[in-house]
Length: 223
Image (cartoon, rainbow, N blue to C red; front, side, top):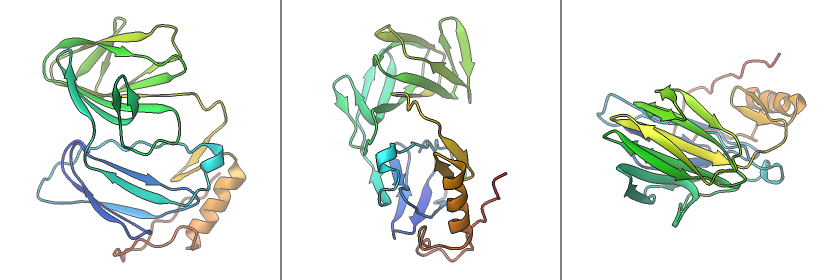
């Protein structure tokens, strides 16, 4: 959460407000339903919703929900760092991590140059939330993503303009075909089609959001 507040409710019975500098992690597993609504007096809402593909042996695990109000924070090279998930140098996030990965929020109020440590087996995506960053002479503006494949280098140098905030995301490549349709992730069209059928039929697989009487959205049919 970057700005404003969101109220999360789900079919497990959790009801949780998420505020800036906090993380909500919903693990869908074999199925869950949820709703999200703006909350409080703040009119502007700004957040990043990231999807993590579960490893094959955990994709049908029981659903769960976790809230993390306190995350590791530190300052270096003129920037503020918040570790969202995984490990970085001497820091470890409390957020549940089922795959080798890292997620980090980096914010610089003033122009600066930072050096980020790289993992030898990770590929990375650097997403600009505000401002601009420059990597090896190429400029990336807000809502643009820089992809960095597996590198032999141990570090990556980034130049930040004033008031720049990015998400530094990385992990080991899955090396398998992943399909996505609407709110469903699967390894085959048949698996996703079954999820669509179950959802639209109101199957107990997904449950019903507690304390939310609105009619669930209908999944579009997959071509």
